Length: 79
Image (cartoon, rainbow, N blue to C red; front, side, top):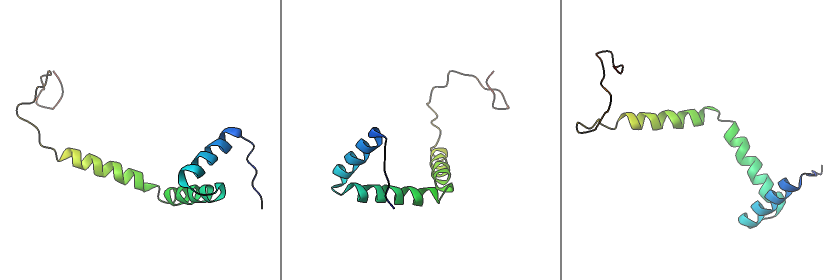
């Protein structure tokens, strides 16, 4: 079944992608669609990556010489 793309901007993007990949437009579209299908089939992957990044940030030790312009109360709230 043929696919016709009537949006000239989309056609231009597909042509640019094909040139950058050194392939035909069909091959470029196929690879892009395949990658998106794989990415979309793992909806939690982005969430997992974000959580992993936040865990790494949490492991960075506080510096005793860091400047904090706010004063904090016993409950961890700014005064």
